[in-house]
Length: 95
Image 1 (cartoon, rainbow, N blue to C red):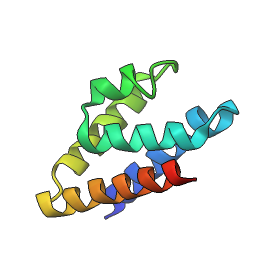
Image 2: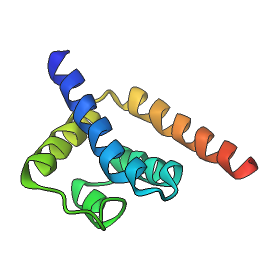
Image 3: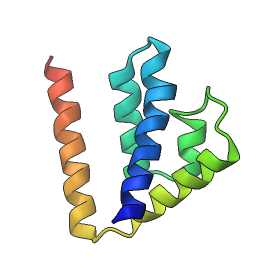
């Protein structure tokens, strides 16, 4: 559990430093980041939502480990996270 908490903190720190501090549409960045994290590859993270940022080797290693944890979730749990993301994205379209 401690390792998972550490990875979550790394991901949140990355989001805050890259996405929220830019003054851009942080909600859009966050949703694209989550979507790619759930169903994409680490390379797609660097080419997509993180493409305009210089992600150092340690952050890449942390993201790869976080992605591995997500990929190791039971299929049912991962599917529920994807459904939740779809629900959130749908509610943003209604706003």
